[in-house]
Structure formats: structure tokens, C-alpha cells
Image 1 (cartoon, rainbow, N blue to C red):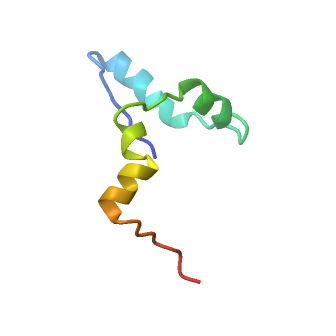
Image 2 (image 1 turned 120 degrees about the vertical axis):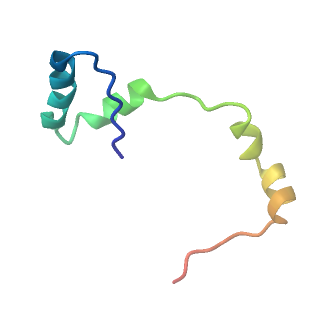
Length: 67
């Protein structure tokens, strides 16, 4: 998913921002970029993703893919 955020104040800055549309990454480039920009989501996600909260909120219901 791409969600560009433009914050240009001048035509030159806008041209620089739009120039990013021409950048093409090789197949090996996204992985190190993803690793470098990864963040730990932490609380409250850690708590909400826990087995106890899942059990309390869903009653243990699990959705299995259709085969």
C-alpha cells in the first residue's frame, strides 16, 4: 500500500515529491527497508492480542479457512 504525504510549499518541492513516483525498487530492496522501519506496537496491542483477551472476547471461537 502506498500512501504519499505531500508537504510541499514551493513548486520545486512539489516536483521533488512527485519525482518519488519514478523510483522503482528491486526485489531485494524492500526487506531491509521494512526491517529498518519496523516498530514494536506494544501496549495495548500486546494485551489485546493475548490468548486470554481473545478467549474472553470471542469465547474461543476460531474461524478456519474453507477447504
